[in-house]
Image (cartoon, rainbow, N blue to C red; front, side):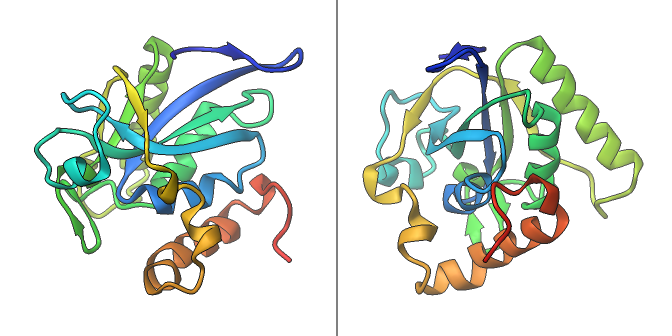
Length: 191
């Protein structure tokens, strides 16, 4: 599915597909963004149809771990989603996020139409010109082809496993950073 889609009601929603390392991290943050109606972890950018997590982890399918966001552009713009995206991962490391290494962890924006492509390039330029990162941004900006939802056990991973070491040491700091930087974008203030 690409471009705008209708939901139950008069508002039109849009889709965004972003990869920035482990999809658990992105999912945990974007679930808290006001205006994001659905976050689905999955795979995009590869050649194998309907890949499994195990196949993607080999790096041979070409897929990246991504999140597909269904959002209401009246509540949160695509540009704002990209700004959040660039604040919660390192877009300067090729095929790597922290200890996660491989093409499946690459920084990538799968754009759905020329407007999303233009906005992605503009946001990258803004961050580069502002000197936000010490190294060049290596985020791929490529056309969307297909999205394959991840297996059920990956969904809501942070919410279901807050005591796990990976959640406490990797995901939670990203969630806290998002909450601090984008307090005005939260679905509800943290308790």
